Image (cartoon, rainbow, N blue to C red):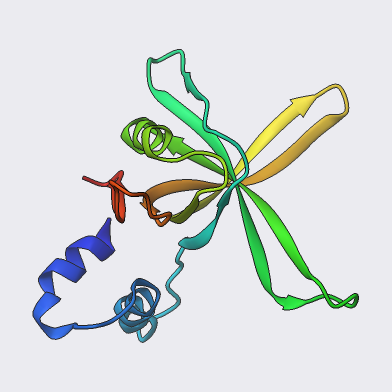
Length: 153
């Protein structure tokens, strides 16, 4: 991805900056010459259930996970709502996540939004989901501290 290249190239100039801030910093220079379009999602939430890996017809491993992400504000009743967001994990990211995470664990996820068309008896529907590019396991375990699985490597 372009942002990985730019980060490595400019690493000496950028210190102590979060990923979200870096994305804004890195791509803001492209706004001078016109509009720059960015499809980037960063989520932190809990796994709703254990991962199940499937194999596609082409032999690739794929898993779908649902992240429970609480909102940062209260609703009219004074409670916090939670969004349940479907995410797709491919190959090594799926396998490592299944190996190290279980239901209830907290993970950080960086990816992109994708729309998928589903046709059934009722007609066409579109489903919005997140395709994970990087997962960070945030739940601390006795033998495991923070681990990272990066699809771009």
